[in-house]
Image: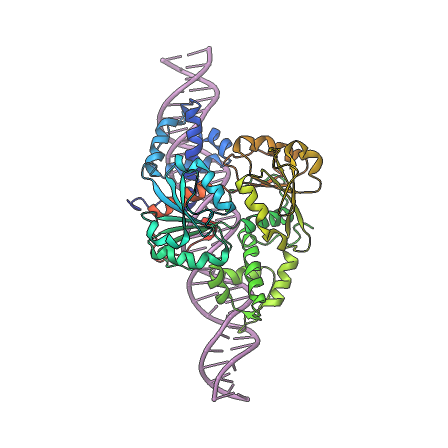
Length: 222
Length: 222
DNA sequence: GAGATATTGTGAATAGGGTCACGACTTTAC
DNA sequence: GTAAAGTCGTGACCCTATTCACAATATCTC
């Protein structure tokens, strides 16, 4: 179940969910074929990059025709493991955490927030969007088979909770706190730092006034 | 005020706010000097990368000693234009938007959310965290000198509102909707797509099981 | 003050990703 | 059926960013 065709660049892997979503849109619109050029305009990624990305999975298209939407979709569904749902725990039901619980896009994809934790007794015992909220003290006993955690707690709590998560068998963390957590190397941590994203945007605007460039993703990379 | 010493790589520019924040922490802890190695452990960025980043601004450190925290901090304050505050408008006071308004980190830095807009009459006229909320119909007349917008609206609204923002003189957009907005090339757009971030994390965990790697920023370097 | 230790700044090598441009092949038009 | 138009897949190139590794220089120890 892991890394047999490890050749896919990380940058490509990051774009796959994006492609998948837009292909889904097209499919719902009844579109049967799509060219890299069309897709490029929709997702704002260069068409050559799209073709290269797809090519890592083999020859999925047809010359002079483009790509068959349904076929491509089926292919990505397998590749992205859409069928095997990854269980996610959300830690910290503040404003940001609540936003996550309301976003129902999770259900449509390969991830599902199964449960949430918070320290506030008023929240404990309720549920938001069908996701039950437990007390943070019960983290270890309730976590179950969740393998990924979304960390939306105050940054002062981040390191301590991260350690408990690792102890309980979590293998990935999406860290929204400004704190840089220290965990064993086998744990994958992605940081999304909202303050930094905003500051970086401002910095780019001031120092790199663009007049004919393209925008980049998120990212970052970014 | 724009791009006189354009030599700073974008990847470096994105790390500057991170460095700045950790240097601030150190300063508050009363630390007077810091080495690239120490900083590396704190921010999870390779020490050689940190030294290279700093070197774009000249020789800020001292061999055999490290960097003087206060000096470095003062230098970054200038470089990041901490003094000149960029006014930000937040569009869409839902869960995610509310989270932004409560985050007070904005005040400490070079950006400040000055006003917010929403379509819900119950929210209009109130304020959250001192930020007044106006009706979205008043966008054009109230926007004033805000030059950056945070877009946290339903994705169906994203393109339409983006066009109105551009019309009103916005130069940068931090887009949290899954929609890819189309704007003139001079406008800088950064996408932060929470669903994709989560899916990408899951994909990496499944296909790139790490056993001795390091994590990256946001990504996924990210 | 001399030797040991620490740490920077950077040239050079490496890695990683994006884009161009074109041959090959398919579809479309007539 | 033939010519024109469309589109993929990819070799070659370029650009950006990261990392290594070490000379230069500073501090620390005694």
